[in-house]
Image (cartoon, rainbow, N blue to C red; front, side, top):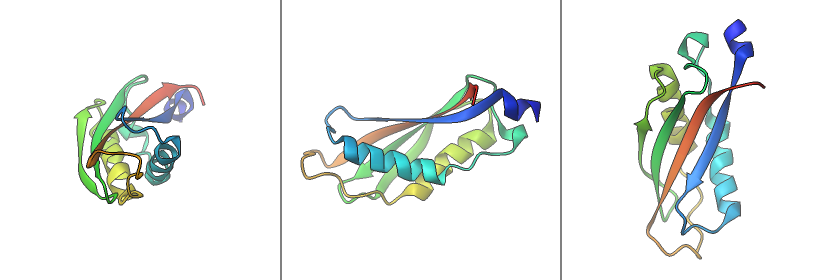
Length: 115
């Protein structure tokens, strides 16, 4: 219980600079956030640690790939972060204003102090 009170999960998403659509970024973030399932207390990493999931989204919104590019120190946390990205797919098709065939996105799932 004390561990749960000491922190909370934080999801941040970072997208390739060529993607200018804040609306698209918000849709992708919301989908991943909706699929996040926090592992039990034993699966929580040390405070301040994070998992980074690197994903590639195709023009049609399908998930081309998703891998853990930075580990948190907790296998359960890393697996939960990867699962959230995979379960959120497929994503909406890439905006017509985006000219590349795929989009790189990085999802950072941290365990941070406070609510």
